[in-house]
Image 1 (cartoon, helix red, strand yellow):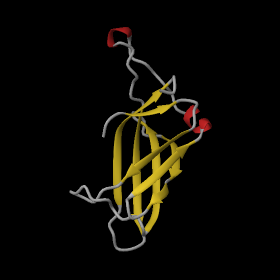
Image 2 (cartoon, rainbow, N blue to C red):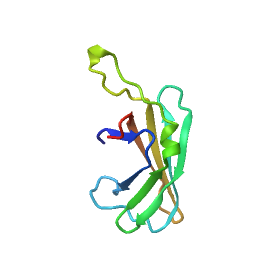
Image 3 (cartoon, helix red, strand yellow):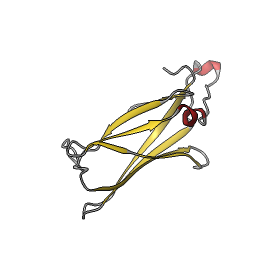
Image 4 (cartoon, rainbow, N blue to C red):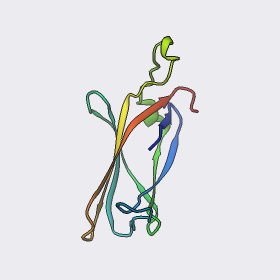
Length: 121
């Protein structure tokens, strides 16, 4: 997955598509028990935000997570030193955990680099 950037202080929604293992076919989310999105600090692994995902297209494997402006304000934005051209520093990681009510095995996805943009870009 590429860079995952969240604008600080702004409401933010994003949509994910869950694919079947070793395939480009969507995972059927008709029988989802729960889908949880968590953002946690990279160094201490303290959870900052926990949200329930909203399933938007069950057969197409699509679900959405919406963060409020108050939630994105909880996130810290840091920049690197001048010699590093003030790039945004990675402060957080995220996980998506999906469990099913039928016999489908649970799915977990890890987002390694979650950046927080001070400009909302």
